[in-house]
Length: 285
Image 1 (cartoon, one colour):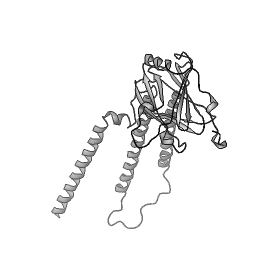
Image 2 (cartoon, rainbow, N blue to C red):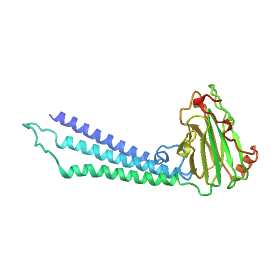
Image 3 (cartoon, helix red, strand yellow):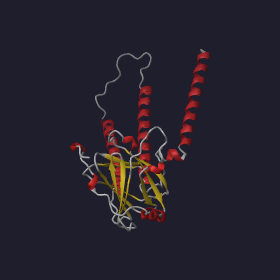
Image 4 (tube, rainbow, N blue to C red):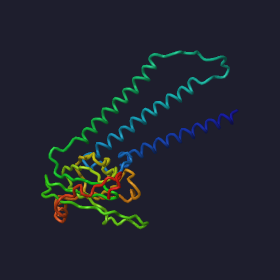
């Protein structure tokens, strides 16, 4: 009997030590920048919107995990506290309802939904608030399977200029980044992207920007942000758009205003219009 008690006591200590170790590891890992960023790509200061999106994401997970921990704790407590004891005869006392508990189970989820809705709606409105007088306006045109960029006159853009992307073929060799369509943006300047399509539905996605917008034929879409960190960011089409969808890659280079102006000065004048648009349903090429 003593041996059994010692074994049980040792098992309890082992479980306690393991639990403390796991809790400590989780607490320490929470101090890393990756965890504080919610394992999202990029950083908080990539654009004017990334910090807001990161906070919404991380705080939503904190709230969800807290609710989950409380729920699982109450379940385990009920299992232990109200377990059937030895020598118990018959059924436990049957309760048809518990009004305070039912009000609690209704009010708390409703409160959580309202809170989540409020913060999501607040941040979404801020992200989708149009720039009154953007420094840069670019018409980003998706096409099978590349991108065109029309830099529109206005703000710090002196003339209409354009850059037409060509399809990059993935043949098993590393992608030559110098051949990818590249969108240039000036750091610290307000940007409006007008998103249109020449053929089918595409999706403009720069993971580090934490924003994605569908590009639907006949239904222009927009993105508003201010690039705040110089660098080169990978982009891709996030909507299955045909046989070579995986090849529809691009880059975004956030540079100084001087470098931005230097790049625009080497581009052809004018804008690429709808001449190259087609309707795939009518097999127009």
